[in-house]
Structures are given as structure tokens and as C-alpha cells.
Amino acid sequence: MRILQIIEASAAGVGRHLTDLLGELQYEDCELHLAYSPRRMDRAFARRLGELRNTTASQIEVRRRPHFSDVRALRYLRDYIKQYGPFDIIHGHSTKGGLLARFLSRYGAAVVYTPNAIYTMNPFASGMVRRVVGTLERRMVKRTDAIIAVSPEEQAHIESLGIPSNMVHCIVNGVDPTPPMDRNEARRELGLSQEDVLIGFVGRFSQQKDPMTFVRALGRLVEQGHRFRAAVVGTGELEHDIRSLAEELGVGDRIHWLGYDTAQMTMSAVDVFALSSRYEGMPYVLIEALGAGLPIVTTEVAGARLAVEDGKNGFVVPVGDSNALAARLEQLISNTQYRADMAVAARVQADQFSARRMAQETFALYRDLARNGSARSTRRDTYDRIRSEEDPTVSDEPCQPSMHA
Image 1: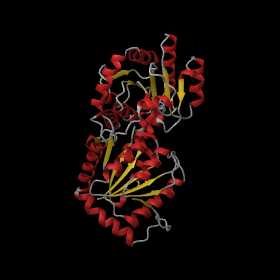
Image 2: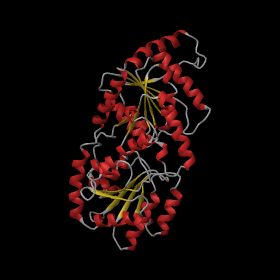
Image 3: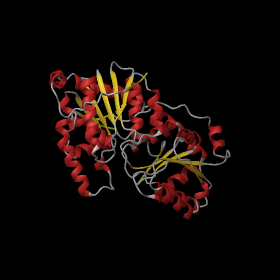
């Protein structure tokens, strides 16, 4: 089976999702191709991309928002299909990758789309924007064979847009376990004593991740006289605002601002993990926190109740409620035995979120789509036509992908 993956948002959770998926698909009976944009690529994606085996990867120049470069990217991808196809599956990730994949539907492959928190879930988008995007998603159904939701909540939301339920498949995110750093070493790196209780946060400094609510919760803990420290991993457009708020609330000197690429150290060092997001598809950080054996306090976003059994391995609190977040954090930082019991439960809960399970379910969907008679009968005819006829939408420039092997 030939599979072409397309991604623009090659960073953070979306990038992690795709590289984990590719890492596991290499063990299946398939030929893997990847087209990715380097514009938003983070170092973690670049590192994992370099570790992939048997994946032919090439760069496409596309931006997050609509842009003239999208036309060039489509021409490149059509040329790529002409040169390296036919493909059985074209799989687009996140909004832009999904659009590109679906505009390639006439080339005979079955088209799969994984939104990774579909844009209409964004509470910060205006009602008009959500209606426009919802209408676009419904119109793109005719170009789509399957949509993968990464949590039951996202699946229900996609179906509420009027997308046929038999097209939407829930395949929950999974990760490969990352070998932890030595806890004592990780804490020494942060200058912590054995008595210090460390609260962790990992996420972009953006409206979606809502780090302001997290900092307000820390401010509440300071008011109550609790001893703790915090490790914050992330950067983003709200960085100045969040640092200013931390100073205003008297918690700035308790926070270790760690930037990016230190999540592994943070998970190894912290005692309690907090997530304050406004919306999610299925947060990878919750799965990683479970694997690290961390009690979790999370807002009630999609996937939260899959990862956290309230009162057993953590707590789920209302979105945007810094007082509720602080109250649950207070329960955990003040009770060593409670944290220890929840840590055991977290590791048990982590077993259900493996990258292997995610990839096997995805490959099974690919197989079902590839076996579809109508898709299979048109694929060769379409491919033969574009190989033999002059197609004005195809670039004359040759594709030059690079093989990671």
C-alpha cells in the first residue's frame, strides 16, 4: 500500500501525532511518503523526522493561513503523485494539510483527514467564522473518504456539523513511551531540594492553552501560604503577558521558565501536572504525564476524561476557573501520600494510550478504504490518464524528495 501524508503544522501535538504514526507504520506492509512544511517546524519534529526509517520525505512551502503559495504546493503535490504514484491513501493532517489532501482527491486515492481539534471547536473564533468553516467542511465531504477524530468529544463535534457519522472514525492519540530522565538529576538541573513540590505546565503561550489561568491559580496558592515551585515549558505570543502577570501576583520567582525542548526533563522532575487549556482535540501532554506517573489537574477539554479518572489519578475542573484549579492543586501539593497513590493509578491508565495501538487502528482504516471497489477501480484509470495526458495544473519542475533510511 502506498501512503502519502501531508502536513503544514509540523510542530507541537500535530507534529508529534504524525511522527509517532509514521514511526509505527514503518512496520506495516506499506510504502510511506511525507510532504511537510518547514515554516512552523519545531526542533522536536525535525529530530523525529531524522529518526524515521523507510519514509520518503519532501518539503512543501505552505503557510498556516490561505496564501498564493497554496497553489504552488498543489502543483508540486500533483507532480509528485504523477511521478511517484499511484497512491492508495492520501492523508492530510490539521486544517491546511487536510485541505491540500482533499483538493487532490481526483487523483484516485482514498482521502483521509485528521483535523487534530477541528477549527470549529475554537471558542475564540467568531460565530460567523465557525459557520463559514462548518459550511466548508460539509462541502468538502464529497472529496473525503474518512475523517479521523482523536477523541470521542471531537467525533461528536464533527458529526454535529452535519458530517455523516459513517465517515467519522474515532482513533485516540497514542505515544511511544519516552525513557525518563533520572528524577534526581532532573531536579538538580532545576536547583530543587527533595522537599520542594514542583507543579508542571507544558504548552504554547496562546489563548488556546490559557496559561494565564494557570498563573492565576499559582497566585491563589501563594495567597494561601503554600510552598511550591513551578516549571513552565513553552513560548508564544502571550509570553510577555504571562510573565507580567506572574510578577504582579508574586509568583514570578517561583517559576522556572524553560522555553521549549525540555518537556522530558520537566515530566521527570515534577510532582503534579496541570493543564489549563480552553479547547483541545486530545492533548498529548496528558498522555505523557500519565506515562511519567504524574497526578493531573486538567480543565474539561476533549480527551480529559479519557486520561483522567476524577479522584483516582487526578482531577477535572471547569475551563477558565483558576480558583477550582488552585483548589485541586492545593489538595495534591499538601498531601504526599495522595500524590503517591495517584501516581500509581496514572501509570496504569497510561497503558491504553500506545502509539502502536493508534497506528494499528489507523492502518486498519487505510486497508478498508483501499479495498473499496469504486476507489480501487478509479485509481489506476486516473493515474494512467494524468501520466499520459498534458495536465496544465502540474508543474514541470521535477520532485526531489529525500529518503530517510
